[in-house]
Image 1 (tube, each protein chain N blue to C red):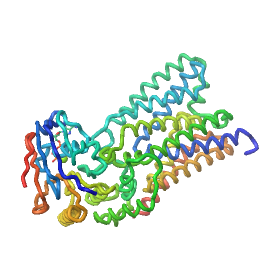
Image 2 (tube, rainbow over the protein chains, first blue to last red):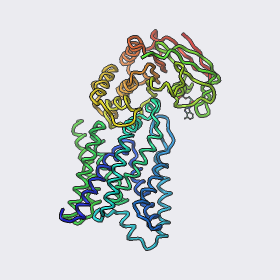
Image 3 (cartoon, each protein chain N blue to C red):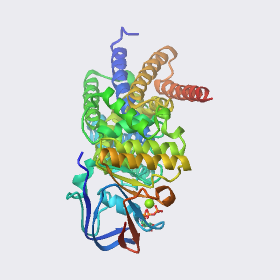
Image 4 (tube, rainbow over the protein chains, first blue to last red):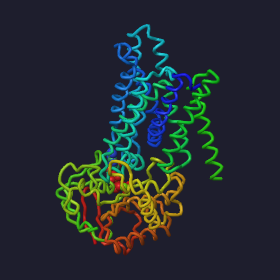
Amino acid sequence: MFEFEFMRHAFLGCTLVSVLAGTVGWFLSLRRQAFAAHALSHIGFSGAAGAVWLGVSPLFGMIAFSLLAGLAIGSEGEGRGKIPPQRDSTIGLVLAASLGLGTWFLHEANGASSMATTLLFGDVLGIDTPTLFILAGVTALCLLGLVFLGRPLLFSSLTPEVARARGVPVRLTSLGFMAVAALACSACAEVSGALLAFSLMIGPAATALRLGLCPAMGLLVSVLLALVLSWGGLMLSWITDIPIPFWIGLGAGIFYGLANLWTRLRTN
Amino acid sequence: MASPDNLVLENITLCAGQTRVLNQVSLTVPLEGITLLSGRNGAGKSTVLRACLDLVRPEKGQILIDGLPPGMACERIGYMPQGLSDAALMIPAISHVMAAMDGARWGVPVRFGQRKREAERLLALTGALSFSKRPLGHLSGGERQRVCLAQALAGQPGLLLLDEPLAALDHDAQQQIVALLVSLTQTLGVSILMTSHETAALEGKVTRVLALENGELHVRI
Ligand SMILES: Nc1ncnc2c1ncn2[C@@H]1O[C@H](COP(=O)(O)OP(=O)(O)OP(=O)(O)O)[C@@H](O)[C@H]1O
Ligand SMILES: [Mg+2]
């Protein structure tokens, strides 16, 4: 299957996106922001719809919109120690508002419904060289951001109140991380579509967390699982002709189930 | 590790929501040894500790810890909040302590091995080493409290602010923790400002008592 250029591109794209999804997704799951991952990619969809209407590249619309939404989500208030109580509702409201906008954009850009399908379900076999470069750039940028934010982000995810007491700028860290997450979600949506972008972010990460690993191991396992999922999904969809999001979603569920079983057997 | 000498409150008015916790209080207290902040439920003990950490700002007045405003003194203060956090319960206990050691710095973590040994030392000190590899969520309340205490000790603080460190501990564990706190003050010269309703366990161990009542703060020896 590697004799075709689009397959080589697809594998490269999947590799980049998996590294990104594995790391960003691990932090998102750790911070119980799985809903944010879901919301950001859908918000990206609205942005892409807007871009189609304006006649610019959907990827840019996606990035711009989810960045804005990421900042809105990240600027949540601080609760007393625990996870901010309004986190879920903030995300939900930002999501609702931007999906509303997205519907309007799609309506204005009428006749673009095939575009909408592509945005929703992704087009991993249609990744051209410029897109690959953009994906590589976004991945590098996000990883750099994570490396920079890493320690304060981990500290404030583990114990927000103590981190704040030690002088960690918790809100700034949270904002920075949501910007990274927004970029990452746009990149993932490019491959697996807005509907399932978060499956690659949350599936491997949730599995790694379920295993109770330390942060370094958890991140590693999360990336490896994401790679197995996306490469495996690509090969299986080549063989079976069933779209790749199906295999990724199924695989994510199976991995999590296995991790669950393993942890239970080990503790009994 | 020079321990902070004193806590200065200059005409402080401090509120939590609608409740006025401190009403124009001016006070200078030396902090050597163990200082117990006492008061009934809802008197505002936690809020006073949080104000000392710049987690809440007073309406009026100024707090100085060892001559510095709270925001600038925070690197030398270890903090243990009241109650159990519900964040990141699937991460091993030891990682929680390690994250606190260099969590305030940007960039990649360095000296992993050294930090791990230091974390293990702190966990051994608080009697939490035997369960340090288990996820935090799989520990009992008292076990988690020991992990939190180890976390507060990360970074060799000169002052510890402990909010109810004895709650949820059985009688023996209370004695152990109190003994540990006393030995910390004696061997390392650490000062401790803590809240607790377990006055029996602290009998004879406390240097000073700060009584918080109706917006006023009084020193009792
Ligand atoms: N975020 C908040 N919003 C509104 N009121 C608050 C808030 N936090 C605390 N309070 C109120 O401020 C008062 C002091 O609270 P605080 O937690 O400091 O009491 P405490 O002395 O630590 O009590 P306890 O012994 O139960 O721990 C309480 O009456 C509480 O209801
Ligand atoms: Mg309290």
